[in-house]
Structure formats: C-alpha cells, structure tokens
Length: 364
Image (cartoon, rainbow, N blue to C red; front, side):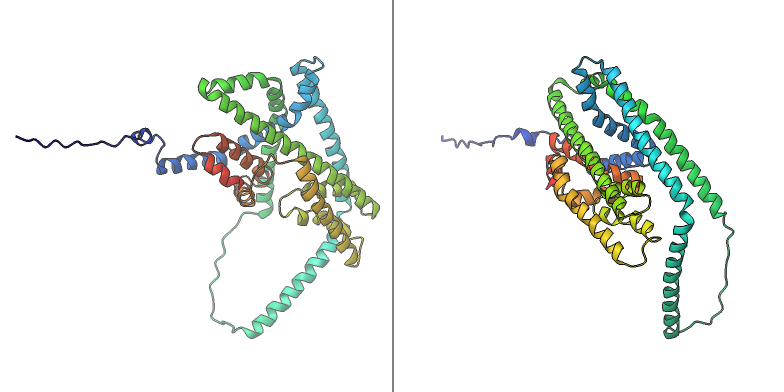
C-alpha cells in the first residue's frame, strides 16, 4: 500500500508581525492630545512662566559655567549672574520708562495728528458709503430695534486690564527665583531627570537633552545679540535724522524687527507715528521705511544665519503653523515662544523611535 505524504512548509514568522501593537489607538491619541492642549490653555500662566524661566536659565548658564572655572561655587555664581542680569535689565527698562514718560507728556501733539488722519480716512469712507447708497436700492420697511443694556466699556476694560496686570506681575515675581534654582541646581535636576528613565534609555535621553540645550542656547543668544544690534543701529539712525525719542523708538523698532514675516512692517510703526508730528511730506517716511527694511534684510540674511546658526531646523510651514497655533493659544507670548517650542518638539521627535518621520517633516 502506498501512502502519499504531503509536506506542508510553514513560512517563517516575522517577529515584528507576531507582536501586537502596543501603541494606543488613534482615538486615545486624539483624546490625549486634547487633554494636553487643554492643559496648555487653562494653565497658560504657569506654563509660560516656566518656559520663560527655562529660556533665561539656558541664556545665563554659560556665564555660570565660566565662573565655575575660576572656582566660584555654582550657587554663588548663579546669584551673581542673576543679579547682574537683573541690574542691566532694570537699567534698560528704567531708561525706556523715562523716554515713555516724556512721550506720554507730548502725546497730545501726536494724538491730534492721528485724529486728523483718522478723520480724513473716515470722511473718505463716508463719501464712498453715500455714493454706494445712491446706487443701491433703499429699504424703507420699518424695523424694530432691540437694545440690550451693556456694561460700561471703560469699567470692563479696566477690570480686564487690572486682572491681566496682576497675573503678569505674579508671573514675573516667580521668574527670578525659578531661574536661580535652575542654575544653582542644574546637576541635581539633570541627575533626577536621568533617573526617570530606564538605564537602557538614558544615553538617548542624554543625547536629546544635549541637542535641546545646544539648540536653545544658539537660538536665545543669537536672537538677543541680533535684537541688540538692531536696536543700536536703529537708535543711531533715529538720532542722526533728528527723530524724537530715538532711544525708546530704537529699542521698540529693533525688537519688533525680529518678529517673523511681519517684523519689517511692525518696525515701521513706532518711527512713522513719531514722525507724523515732524514731517509734512511723504519722502522722509519712505526713507525711514527703506532703511529699516535694509536693516531687516541684513539681519535676516546675515546676522541670524551667522549667530543662530543651523541649530533650528524648521521649515517655513512649521514656523507659520507654530506662530498661528501658539499665538492663538497664548497670545503675544505665544508668538515669542512658538519657534523654540516647535524646535524642541522637532529635536524630541528626532530622538524617539517611531517619531522620526514627524521630525523629518517638521524640518523638511
């Protein structure tokens, strides 16, 4: 008797296919992302205070490390550096406040010019509306008007302003202490952060933190130097042309020049407003706009690449979306923190398995 034996060959099992996916499903990820964004919105004051403190700590840490080479204890060096930084910042703010007070005293002169310009624009708009009403058919059907009693706008604005000022002062009061503790306890914080991860992951975490440190230091110091250079040359330019309040106008214009995309336009606003009371023709305004535009091009194409370097690998789409999202979430501070936050997210994605495609997309 013959038996037919059929051999069944089982294909090898791919170990990757035998594993069940451990990542949460899409719905859980969406819910988690919503929780994170909700926390960022409701705890915005706390998060912004923490992020600003981290940026200042990264900016001052190289000076503290330099003092350590001369055997200055880290806590003492952190205190010295922080006090010097606060002194310099206070001096700049004090000088700017004096100029702002002088400008406030002369505000009626500028406000009258602005009122005249606004009135001229309103008259033109009114003439256009009258011409349009002559063409468009009129509806004589009687309408019922409903009026709702509203709260006094002055009172509401004052209450909102006092609330925002109180929150800002409260946050500012915490920043120096946070910066000092971060600088003085850097090694303990670093060691404690390493202990949060398994020993096999600590090398990758250390590389990630080193990359974040290099990126943030380059970004912060580069932008501070560029802002200082722009403020200085703007101040000298306004002083040469005889513009009123050149110091205050130069600082505001130089800082606004660093705002992505619209910085060159924002930098025009302070000198053009000041120049309304000085110039009666359009020529000086065109000259001021041209010189500030030249400063912006030099900063964007020469200073920023040389000082900031290639540490911040973000494409134009990522920068734009980041500015829109974080500006919507946190307002003006979101516009300031958007680029370092997005750059940090990219660095983290570059060092986490499975997230590298997201990091490549953010920097493509």
